[in-house]
Length: 559
Image 1: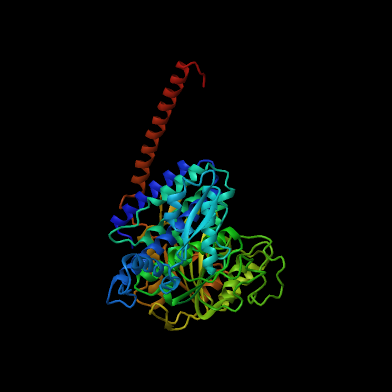
Image 2: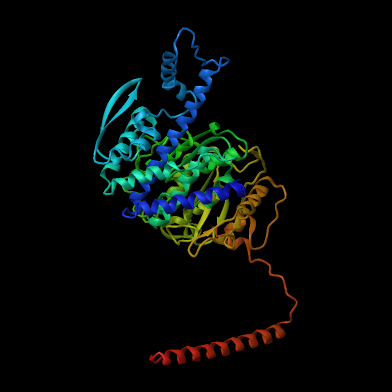
C-alpha cells in the first residue's frame, strides 16, 4: 500500500499537473483533452524507460567485468565514443529487457528541444543508425504525431493503438509546446516510488478526472478504483489467465498487477486478455498496459463482444468486468441458440444476464469471476430473467453477492451489486494458496450499503478498512476459518433459504437488520424529551422566519 509520504508526493503532483494543464488547454473539451494529455504522458513514459535502459547499458559497456563491455584497445577516443554511440542504438539490447525501442524522433528530449523551433514549420536533423537525416515538421502537433507514428512502426504490438491526431487539433501551437514543457517537469525520482509507479499513477489519475469531466460518457471507460480493488482483492488473481470482456481502459488489469506486486507475486505468471468495442477506449487500454510493461492480448481489433468474440477459445482462471448496466438491443446479429446461453436466452431489452453468461462460458473449470451489475439483476422476474437466475442458483454457480452503497459511480446513479461466481465450490487449493472448504449449495451475502464515506458532495468512496472488512469476511467464509454471520452485514445461506425467497438474491433479505444497542432510557422518558426538543426547534424556526420577513420588509420587499 502507498504510505503517507508517498501519498503526499502523489497528491501534490496531481494538483500541479491538473491545474497547469487546465490553464494550458481551456479550449478543448474533455474528450479531446483526454487524448492530448494521455498520449503525451505515454510518450514521456516510454522515452524515460528507454533512457534508463540506455544509462544502464552505458555503465555495462564501460565495465570490464560485464559481458557488454566494449574494449577501447586499438581505437582512438573519437572512434571509441562513436562505437559506444552505435552500441547504445542496438535495438536488441532494449528488447531483451522488455523495454520499448524508442526511435530518435520520438525521444522526449527531441520533443523538448524542438517544440518551440517547429512553430510555423522547420527542417530538423536527427541521427538514424549513426547517420544524419532531415525531417520536415510543420507544427508542434506534427512533431508529436511523427513521434507516435515512429513508435508504432517500431513496435508492432502498438499498431493502430496510438491516437495520432495532434496535427488536427484546433489549438494554439505554443500552448501545445508549453504542455510538453509541463510534462517534462514530472519528477520521476522518489525515495520509494519507481518512475513506472509515478507515471502509472499520473495516467490513472487523469483517467479518473476525465471520467468526472465527461460525466455519463466518461464512465464507459473508467470504473472507480475502489470497486476494482475490491473485486481484485476478493478474487486474488495471483497466476493464470485474467479476462475482461468489457475492459474499458483496463483498470482491472492494472489493479491485478498492483495486487500481485504487493503480495510478492510475479506479474509474468498471469496472462491478460481483454475486449473492448469502442476504438478510442481500446487505445487507452493498450496504452495503459504499455506504460506498465504488461503483456496483453486485446484481440485483433476493437469489436462487439457478442457478435465478434476476440477470444472464442479462451477459458480464463479469473474473469472480471464492469459491463454497461441494463444495456438494450445488445443481441442484434446474435443467434438465439448461441452456445453461451446455457441457462436461458437473455432478453433483448437487457444484457445483464448476457454479460454474466458470456463470462461463465469463458470461465475455466476451477475459475472464479466477479462482475458489477445493476441491483435489478438480483430480483427481476421480467422477460425470463428470474428463470435464468433460478438456473444459476440451482446449478450452484453463485458464490457471493455484495450489495454496494449508492453514489460510487461517475456515470450513473443506478444502485449496483457485485456477483461472484465459480464452477467449482468443492474443497480445493486456490491460486492464492488458500485451502478452500467445500461450499456446495451455499452462498455468502454481504450488505455493504452502509460502508464508505463521501469524498465530495457527489461521490462516495471506500476506505482501505472498508475493503479489508469485506474481503476478510469473504475469505474467512471460503476457508471456514473464523467466519460468523453478522446481523445487518453478512450471512451464509443455503439453497433452501434462497428457494424460500423465490430465488431473489438481494443481501438485505438474508443478513437481516443490524442489532441496535439499547441506550437504557425508558420509552416514555425518551418521547417526553424528544417532544420538548422538537417544540423548541419549532419555536426557533418561527422566530427566525419572523426576523427574515422583517429584514426583507426593511429592504422594500413584501413576503
